[in-house]
Length: 214
Image (cartoon, rainbow, N blue to C red; front, side, top):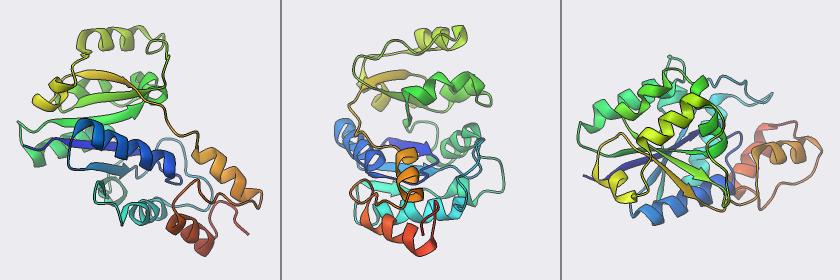
């Protein structure tokens, strides 16, 4: 069965760094597609003037011409809180017991994992693929996370693709130097973020006057 590989995030807004990373993941893992799942109601609030629905719209625009990337609206459309655990449980129910599910996140997010709702049960439903910048040093200082990583880490990518769940793999990847914070700041300052994000997304931001565009 084809593995399910997904990236969650606020995508506030989605940009070329997100998209390039997802495409490189797709090619590296040899899967048909990587799916982006925008969060519905993240713990940290949205930037003023941008709703979860607008973030979802922008992700859809960003991937509309790229079959290697998909979008899953479940968290935005759900009436439940955007807990990753609920998403993982739903994906596992839909895919069955034998399908490999790979949840990808950056090292910065991984280091905050002990603050996530029931995080230690994630590996019952999926693998965690952590994307780290080259030369990263460890997975932080939280003893629970260090133990969690040590107990479940594998260097064999084949285990992610051949088993349904249960492993942590840390992969070094050089990301594009683009951040959503940088893009929001440029827009609020009246400057153009063109070439940092897909043109249809920039058009949408202007059309809906998001992030202080004027």
